[in-house]
Length: 289
Image 1 (cartoon, rainbow, N blue to C red):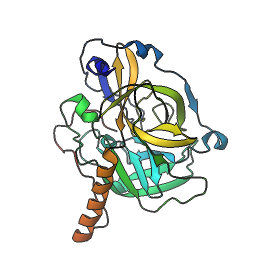
Image 2 (cartoon, rainbow, N blue to C red):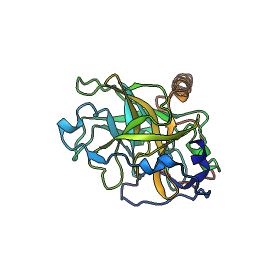
Image 3 (cartoon, one colour):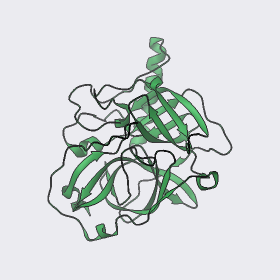
Image 4 (spheres, helix red, strand yellow):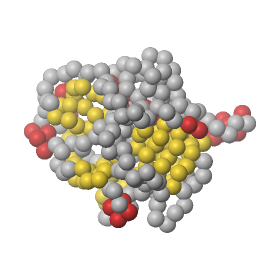
């Protein structure tokens, strides 16, 4: 299914403004080269996780409120670490990096309340991520960020997720996300499919929209939900909506090292708050949260 990639069209980052205004990103023109399995997209519908019972086991997914700029989705992968998409951390108007202290992680947010609230003290993107890359698929590559929270979240009902190996074509995955018009509670889509994959990007049949950026993609292994990828963008192939996601297994080590390097640099400079690494402050024309 590698030939799906040349057929990607209307690529846009899946993020949301707090006012709910949705904007389309630039098109990625290409021939209609959809494969036969694409007809199976949208394998199961969205289910809103509105109650405590519905959300049990998923409260480590939360809403990332990005100052006055919008929101994305993030997932706790350690007591003090949140995984999300790198492009979420840039101002959608100026392309300037958002300061960590302007970001809040609201774990398990639903119906106006969160299980836990934490400010962000440090944020790093993958060192190879380039926010203003001119090639749209390059903008998806390494679109990952780690956020260090001001304090750990240690609650018996809110356990960080494990991470796992990259899924392959045909695998079933689940996505839990917030998005435009469903920002008051997370929704889960179970058993959508991996339609195609490259080392730097996956095409999924999962349904995403503005605000879903950074949402965790799960594989269920031996009854345990493991984060294996992160939602980066939405796209179309042959007129059908698909999601683009970043494989996690290879980039995660570099991302963790970037966080450690940022801490070391802060100690040398006597700073307590770090801005993110990677990207650029000029030439940003793509949709940002």
